Length: 137
Image 1 (cartoon, rainbow, N blue to C red):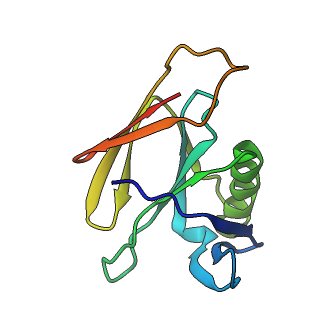
Image 2: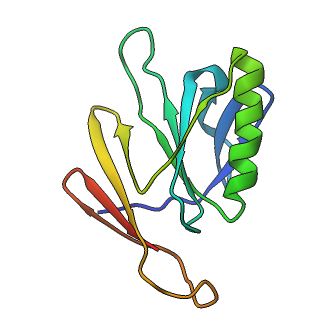
């Protein structure tokens, strides 16, 4: 089962913040230096995955998957914030297949083009089977 949770995403000069949209409470705060890669598909699906390093204790909440109308602007801003925080640019991965970690579980994202015209395109269809997430654009 896939849960889509509406959140507010805030990019500060040092962190990526996910806030509850009603209470504005911080749900997650990820320091920019802990994001080492950003993955995107080559399609117009508005989805990006922010890959987060494991902590020094070996614990990791997991990577962050974001779907937003202005995903290119979000990725561009995060690129600059991460580069300023670490002194080096993050890795950018554009592919139809990539992995994301959710806690202790690794999920393979597989993007497929459904053949619809760009004008009639709605939200992508997302299905999850075991450790595989299929997104049809």
